[in-house]
Length: 395
Image (cartoon, rainbow, N blue to C red):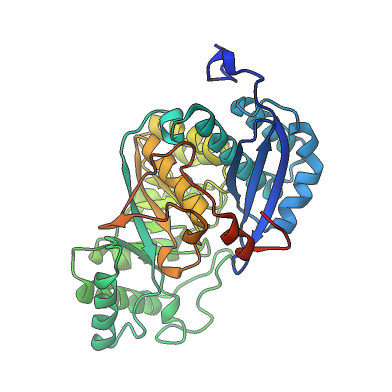
């Protein structure tokens, strides 16, 4: 069987791509929804990691190369799109667009074969995935009452999340100087006095929260090596799962130095896009875990390539996700199909997932999301809802 066509030969060239559309969700300007239509009347949906106005520009450039292609030749479509990406080096616009198209093609394949996407990818290692959630932390990290109130809110969250992530932005102007951190800037520096404040703040949070909920330390690729290591040492007493994105995005030997000296796990990956970028971190023993975002790394096909590399280096995989309901469901299928998968980020409490766009909704109990069992991604779109939440168009 042709590796570029992993399904039955009898299905080859039976279903063809006829159109690719992009939709912008209202109040969710970071990402957009992709819809791939076919001549069989079956369509697929995915999520791209950029606003629709940017995605549309790349679709206008490359859509003609996909129209008429075999919709089930997913690996070939992926390879063709990545080839165009490499040719033009416009990585930041192309790969997020490729990601949404790839998710949609897998959705089509699952519908055609009447199987959930995760069973087509590898077969399932699990039927539910663990989720973690973001929080800003207490209103006042040095007020015991505020810490207790925040901890009670975390425990009372109706989805029962057992893992939470938060950075120390809430300390800026409240213990730390207002300009101590500039997310996205390179190589900011923290003093020992500031690190002591960070340590005490996180210890106060842990004391209020207890030890039945795990904590992730959130950074934004802004620190120099001594500061990143200082943060890791400051939070070590609260036993976090890992420290995320503590150094600038692109690989350098500073990442290897951090991993070698850090008393807690080191993790990165949400801003990386290509398997080769992740491979640099793995080969140089620079991370304990990786954090790909399916809306940036080439969808499910690109994500699987990265996960396969991580498997070779015994590195756990966690998915980053600031997307909508569609990306969350794609993450669930990805997580079910990856042996070394740990958990996924989610935005359910923020209320911007648009779960109402689907008839199935979301099932999360004790912080774990059930992987859909219906064909494709398992999402039955409600057009009347989509028409209300997308801008400048009709579903």
